[in-house]
Image (cartoon, rainbow, N blue to C red):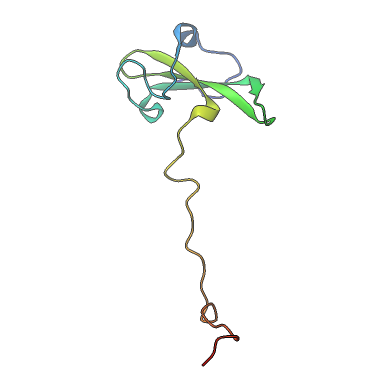
Length: 99
């Protein structure tokens, strides 16, 4: 099995097509369901706001090979969750309230 961070692209990436929906363009499975993954970390592209993006290559279970930009990845259900704010017993106390 190929490591996603190998410096040399595997041969299977040569037939990849660009997917604009960050899923397999043939069967529409997500990147999480791919059999193989390779990330082209040697050739980053810089965005307008000077952030890096990479090409991510996926070999789908259906045989289709596709790629997408790393910044096109949909948000993860595990990341960017808003935590409940911590509340203390003094949060509702306002010394300027009239009693």
